[in-house]
Amino acid sequence: MSDDIGLSLDELREHLEKEGIQPSYHRLKILEYMMNHRTHPTVDIIYKNLSKEIPTLSKTTVYNTLKLFVGKGIVQELTIEEKEVRYDTDTTQHAHFKCIECGGVYDVALEYTIVELGTVTDEGHKVIDCQVYLKGICKDCLKSAQNQIIFSKS
Ligand SMILES: [Zn+2]
Ligand SMILES: [Zn+2]
Image 1 (cartoon, rainbow, N blue to C red):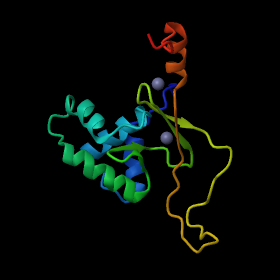
Image 2 (image 1 turned 90 degrees about the horizontal axis):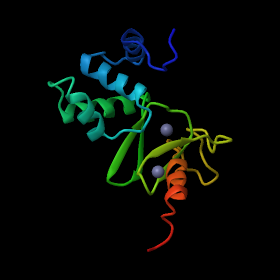
Image 3 (image 1 turned 120 degrees about the vertical axis):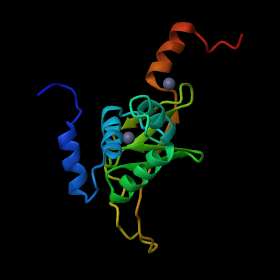
Image 4 (image 1 turned 90 degrees about the vertical axis):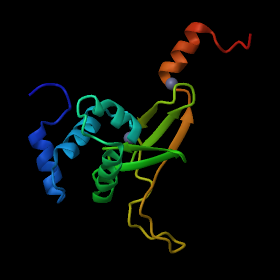
């Protein structure tokens, strides 16, 4: 076993079949990309990176595949910005931190589960999704800001 967190194509195939998803080549490659790039990519980013290797891939296929994965609950959809949907293969409850400097989206551990999905609130509403978004300046940008002293407005 190597250190890298990536799963083999066989394991990914099993993962899809377990969820009743036909493990086509495109679906496997998209899932593999997402497992290996835990950066909450958008459809555009996944398409741009995979289309070099898979010329038959279309943006529509990427989009439809992600919709399928979200529907099956193996991927979650993040809508931190209304016009920019990102995708995450980590479907456990965790917060997302968006850096206003570099635009990166980082996972932030939650100390407790805010609400179990499926819970009916005191008001009688049923919860099917829970997203926690934080915004700020990521640790890398903070570091480079300190180095360059860009806080001065000159
Ligand atoms: Zn940043
Ligand atoms: Zn995440």
